[in-house]
Image (cartoon, rainbow, N blue to C red; front, side, top):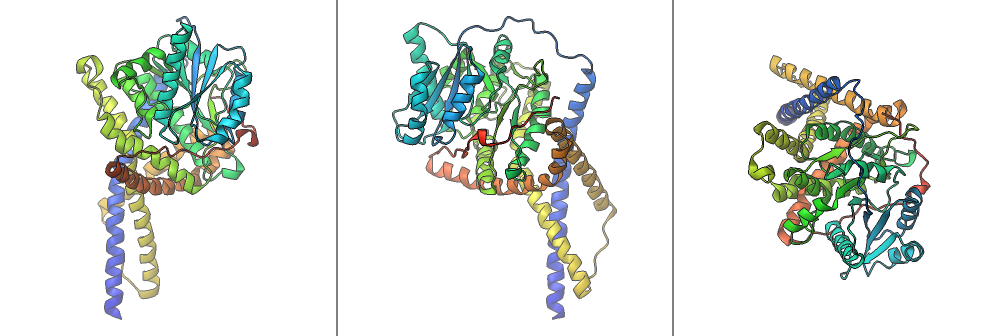
Length: 474
């Protein structure tokens, strides 16, 4: 009995210590990475304090804007979304391209009456049954746009990307026109709805987007490095998409990618074209943002995030490499090249971060079991080395810093009340990240073996059923 207890003690304490040591080193490295980025962001804010927004000097682009809305199994929300968009953009020179499939009868029946009534709607039904991939659907819309240009003898000014459940802002198109005059891509903030029904699962998206679009994309835009597209609330010049289409045999979007929007943004930066992230406020104090509802269950959140991890961190690495070589034949300043690669590393580190967090939670569990063993069986705890205590102390400080940053950005976007929920939601976000990383590896392995890629779309619901959310000004 004593031998069994001693063996169990060795296993629990030894495994717990090794897991905590591995996790502590990983958390320290990732924490330093985040801290350096935060310090760069704070430095940028300090240098630009009090300057405000410079008056825009370029003439806004004229011409019709095309809005691409790929759809599969969206009969519950698409008609409402289209009605909302047409009302918000009343009087705008815009045409909405809706991509559907011949076997998606529900979606076709839901939007056909709207298409018959409003000439600004263009229904594009592809030849193949769905679902294919979102990239393939977008390429069909691109082909339809080209057909319309040839038939009507005109040329579109740009393409706006949105999803089937998005809540758009009336001033969104005017903002795009102003900034597309000297940028190939414009991204506005994405602000998820945070409601009582999905406050804990869906709400963590609000925390993450508030920080990512309040700090990450804003700083990357000012640094002039490649800017990833969020796939919604994003506008691109027609010329930029034509450049990508030339490279890809007439198709600007990669049909074998799960994150074709992210890759488009990164390739635009690799070609040396300018992109910008614009967080603008109207005269009445409202931010110009794209809003939408995100998954409210663990299963759906894991499915969505595993698609993001697979497309960006795994398959995206295969598709994009480390970029930089397409810019002026590779003649770019070395500092800017390494800065761009640092941002790529930050985009791709999620599987490693999930592994580190899993090890940390496993180590905490075993540490708790060791404490139980001390109380029940009289296990002796080995003294902790000074270096280990220092490592734990640094990690604790970095954790508090991260939670403070998350609190700040959630409070800035949603208010102090919601920011209080952001602190416990950080644990939920970590659990979902661990489960999504595990599923992403399986999904990527399946893609490599079969060569088949299926559109793992997010299930959407009617956003009008959600309470109105006023987005707090910056």
